[in-house]
Amino acid sequence: MEYLLHILILIGIYTILSVSLNLLVGYTGILSIAHAAFYGVGAYVAALMALKLQTPFLLNLFLAVIASGLFGAVVGIPSLRLRDDYFVIATFAFQIITFSILNNLVDFTGGPLGLPGISQPNIFGFEITTHVEFLVLVIILAGVTFWISNKIVKSPFGRLLKAIREDEIFVKAAGRNVSDAKVKVFVISASLASIAGVVYATYITYIDPTSFTIMESIFIISIVIIGGSANLKGSIVGSIVLVALPELLRFIGLPNSIAANIRQILYGALLVIFMLWRPQGFLGEYKFGKESAARSKK
Amino acid sequence: MNSLLKAENVHKSFNGVNALNNFSCDVHENEIVGLIGPNGAGKSTLFNVITGFIESENGNIEFIGKVITKYPSHKIIKLGISRTFQDLRLIKQMSVLDNILLCFNNQQGEELQNIIFKSNSIAKVEEENKLKAHDLLRHAGIEEKANDLAGTLSYGQQKLLSIICCLAADSKLLLLDEPIAGINPEMREKILTIISELPSKGKSVILIEHDMDFTMRICNRLIFMDAGYKISEGTPEEVRNDPKVIEAYIQ
Image (tube, rainbow over all chains, first blue to last red; front, side, top):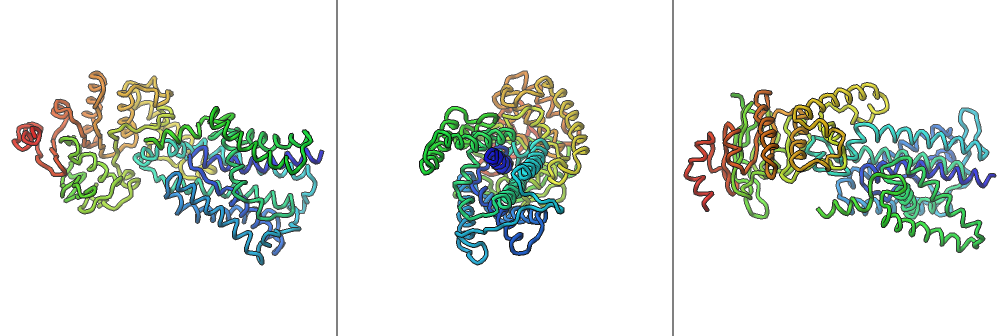
């Protein structure tokens, strides 16, 4: 039972990550591979606050969101001037830098040893310790993330984002500040991703830099694409499929060392299959690879 | 007549080729100015420079008394200049209605803080804009297409839609780049009617068009350009009979 709850909690965490990334990749059409970095910023800010200053959970959550948003602005403002592939490389660089800092700033982040003993959330005296309580917490936070994201994509701002994805020049000619809108959505996406980090850190009570690598970013991108770009519900479906599917491998009885490798193969294979035959993912409207290929030909 | 747009000695070259050569012009309120000349004369470059899509190397552009030469394009366009493109630009994967809604300027729903806290007033503005968009579509005679994807319209209807988008922005000055090139006569008449009504609504137009018959009928003034220079300027008859223009076309 605990095992099942654990999987559900992970699905919740990845729902937060993929819904927030979908705002960028799916709706605005800008591919960032630094999402795990913002996830990590959230986790480390919350963990360090809890360990060093013993501040309460909600304050940590708030500060993590703000810190991650600021990082988003610092990264986004210069790198969003770059176009398509160059932007991807810029986010790649930021991802690597973040990992290196977490890994090497030993006095502060614990380096490769990580930060053990992070206290579990305490919300106005109510301790969250059991799996069921964590599941409730993660559902609430994923719900908030979904609600905010849904509000954004259904608003005129969301329409602007979709238009930017299709034709920036048209949006510019309509008198809109394209780079401004991109920075805003990048900051929002980064802030929302940090929520997942806070939940993860307080749930596992131990974090180390290997949870926030480029592989993690690519995993989140896979969820968005396979679930369906530009469809928020698709990201929930994607999280369920990609988190639960590898767990099934356990029941086949493969030894752990092989199962872990097969998992990587599975993600890669799924991504290739979807790109070839169903680029819009399970529920998406926006055909990820095809559209951007058509655009770059122009 | 009051001056609306004033360009002075605007200069722009691409790799040594002068696209605009100390070009000056004046556009007054409520008039239609035709910009004619052979391909590569710098007509579209002028549009790009005015709207800030390309930065000029030299010269000054004034619009409603403000020097806009160094403004970013979104600021220039918000001041009241709209444009269409020679290679037709629309969001083809969005509905006709959404394309028009995107071009209205009173979008508080595009400010993030408003999305969460002011959803009621955003919804109200959206409804008003939708009504206005339907009015514009009805006036242009393609109201039944409102919910179709813009990409599914015929070429002529798409050109018409790009003009409607400019009207939605309610700009003082419209820059139309070949509004009737490549479309059928019936649609041409429709577009001609819409453009010719604009001065009576307090708007000015600069239009690029190769069809002399069309420009003669609709324009108050013509400017003839060649190789970045202004060769001739005046009423349509004056320009058509200018020996320099005839010479440039024969070459």
